[in-house]
Length: 139
Image (cartoon, rainbow, N blue to C red; front, side):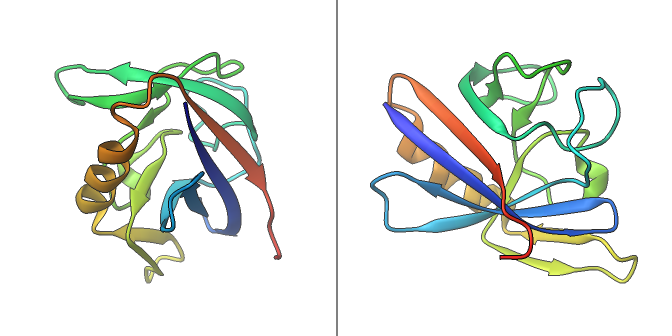
C-alpha cells in the first residue's frame, strides 16, 4: 500500500500549488491544480474537493500509463499526469520538481515529466494506492 499526501498550500489566479509527499519516502514534489474553490462540477476547471481517493492505472490515446483518482464527487477523469501550466489541466494533478509564478498571475510547475517518472517509479508496484488531499492555505 502506498499513501500519497497532497497538502495544498497556495492559490494564485486560476491555479493552486500543493506539496506532494509519499509516506515512507524522504522526498517531496509540487503539484499544480486549477484554482478554487473546491468543486464537484464536471468541466468546471476548478480543483477537486479535498478528501481521500484511491487511484488506479489509466491509459488513453492522450494520456498513456498515468493514474486516475477514483470516485471523485461529481467529477470524472481526474488524472495524475505531466504538465506545466494551467492550460494543461481541467482538474487533474500535475507534479513538478519546482514551481514559480508566471506574468499572467498563474503558478506553474517545472520538470513535470521528471517528477511524474520519480513518483510513478515509487508507486507502480505498490498494489493499492490512496491519495489524501488537504487544504492548508496560509501555512
